[in-house]
Amino acid sequence: MTEDVSGPSGGIVPYLYYDDATAAVEFMQRAFGFEVESAFRDPESDAVLHATVQTPAGPVFVGPGMSGFGTRGTPDAELVSSMTYVFVEDVDAHFARSLAEGAVIRQELHEHFGGNRQYTVSDPGGQRWTFAQPVAT
Image (cartoon, rainbow, N blue to C red; front, top):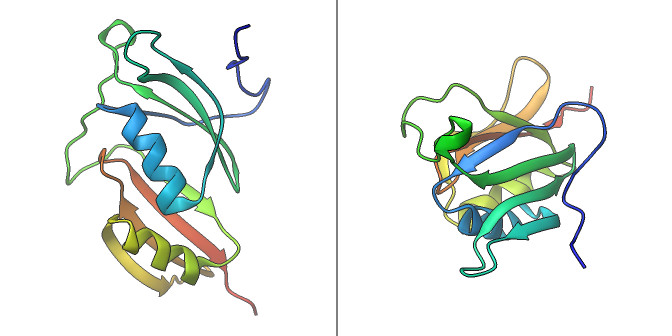
């Protein structure tokens, strides 16, 4: 039986590409507490070819960069053209967890003028993430 990896039927879902999608999914589970909803793997190597990862804000697709799709898994380490912004319930605990798992801190935990307590990290694949929690007023 083949697992359904089609994902949600509507809305916008970010698709993040990595050199090693398997390691990326494992890191997201450990560092960010995300859950793998489904994964399609290469039958020979067991490498993740496509995964739906559930975040507090909804799903994210993860896979290896593929030239056939015009995508690549290795972005410039200092510059990105996109970032994923995720709201979490306890941003302080989330920051500590990410730090303990080796996420590269790009912006320390702080209160942003926009009304959120947040921080920004890069994961081992170079993707940029900002995690935030609304500040009580």
